[in-house]
Each structure stands twice: as structure tokens, then as C-alpha cells.
Length: 142
Image (cartoon, one colour):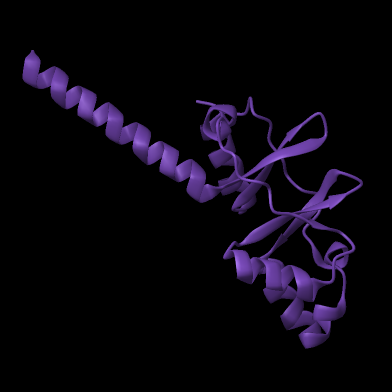
């Protein structure tokens, strides 16, 4: 199964911010939308990821003054991205190795979606449950 199959039919917009966005505004967006990360765009391309972890690290290093900086100064960069052709298992492996929880999905340098580890784990659980049910039916009818 590919990332493209998971995101097919999703009609939600990708919530993102610009590298010039003040950190305080980006933190408010994370809070209001109840999300853990934002892709950061510069000239239409993904420049990095701004996450809750970035906020914590910056607060520890710079205190409340970090809220006046720009997202481009504090984001995690470069962004690790995937394409719609990336398999779910490849993406999960990448997330595990790199200790990240979000991946921008990019086509021709432009972001088309943003997947979280929760999206991928949900797919895997649903897939395993479907296989288990198929096996139960097979065994009962054999």
C-alpha cells in the first residue's frame, strides 16, 4: 500500500505556515487547530517542519523571547518528505529511524498532503484487522 492510496479522496486542506510567520502566530495555529506540526513553506516549496518539539527546544534555549522569532529561524530543516509512491511501511520505517511524526507528501516540489504517524498506524491496524477477519472466515468455511 502506498501513501497515495491513503491520501486519495482526502479533501482537507494542508494547514501550513510561511517561514516568515512569527513563532507566536504558528503556536496559536497549532493550538487552535489541535495539531502537532506544520509544514513550513518558502516560495511554495517545503522548507521545513515546525512542531511542538521545536517550541519546547526553543523555550528551553531562549525562553519566552523565542515567540518573537520567525518560524524559519526555529523550524526543523530540511524537511524529510515522501511521495505518493512511497509505501506505508517505508514511511513508517523512515519515521522510526529519524524519530519524526509527520511527513509532507510532495509531487514535483509542491506539497500535496501532510501525513502523520497516526494516519499510517491507523491504516496498518485497519489492514491487519481486515486480514484477520478474512482468515477467520476462511477457517470457518474450510
